[in-house]
Image 1 (cartoon, rainbow, N blue to C red):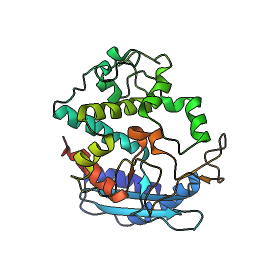
Image 2: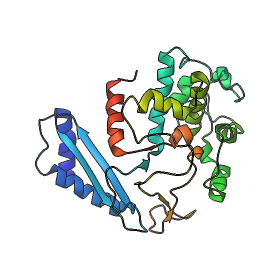
Image 3: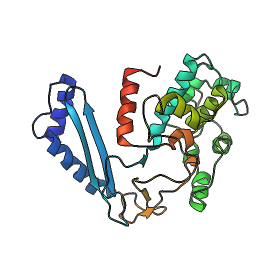
Image 4: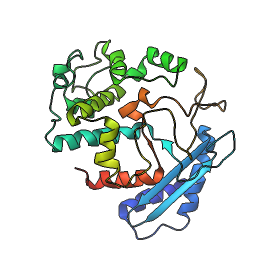
Length: 278
């Protein structure tokens, strides 16, 4: 099986006309293997390779209470894939002349300490040096106390801004959700509309992505893959899972709050790869 996947990776680079015989069966086996390895309830996965073919697979359960199996069209919380929408929105606004990626953050959010030295570019490429709010115990304590609580973007950034920067802007790269909350705030100021509306009008609707959006509340329309977490401090691969499908997306907003489907994300990745939005 591992050799099959290695050969597929090689084959994609060579772009032969069809799937190598047996590769779809190997991919199905990989799903089953990953399900057992990581003890996750369910998986929806897709692979599209130009000139090779189209494969979609599912495994496990979408709902542990009912035992329902996942379907390719199920909605899911797409997490940090949201960042690709946020970055694209910033670049679209730059194309329109409404901002520059070399703007200092102080043009948009001057209350951030050191904002005159941080560029929009630094937020985009994770080199701002700001503290990541999702690394802070205070954030997780409040999430645990009330997962459905509504967060203002300024509150999320404020948690991080209370601490000294980790490094000078542009000198290091460090993955950081604070950067992408700030970019969402800039999108709203530069466009004059809410981030959710800007995403819809400028990206998802033009691409025909009918099931992908930045939600305002905790609900997610059926059918969807339910989400599960382990207890605090427990092994993340533990089988002791608690459903947490209805947390507030405002806690990750433009850094990770969107809902989507696998089919919509196929449209999105093609648009990104071909640069059709920019």
